[in-house]
Length: 129
Image 1 (cartoon, rainbow, N blue to C red):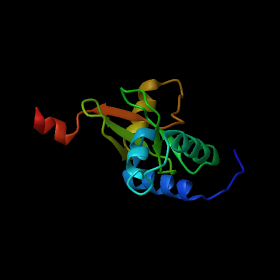
Image 2: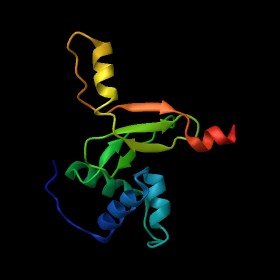
Image 3: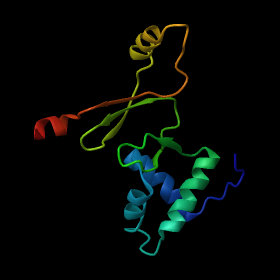
Image 4: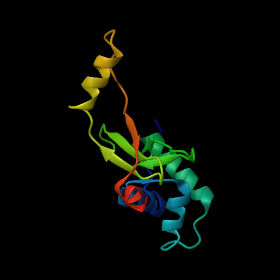
């Protein structure tokens, strides 16, 4: 874990941006930050997200079909729902209901230690069909 605790205008802005969006790629963060900081570069955003990730101020979220790094501001243990049509990523809690069912299906005393990602179609994409 990196011990650098610098709080620059960019680190604060990136952390706030991801918190506002919930989950974001570097491209999405860059587009959002350019409203306030027109001169911010993609390299700066990349360095800041890596620094925040190393410090534990952000975590990785499921990447989706585009296979892009997505950052998550929610540092509490949680699971995700991902729309297989539009890529929407939503925090969900499957701890009480779903995990025990999956662990029983796995058998042999296996336990889930990481987060789960459930794929499906979101309400908006279902309506659009």
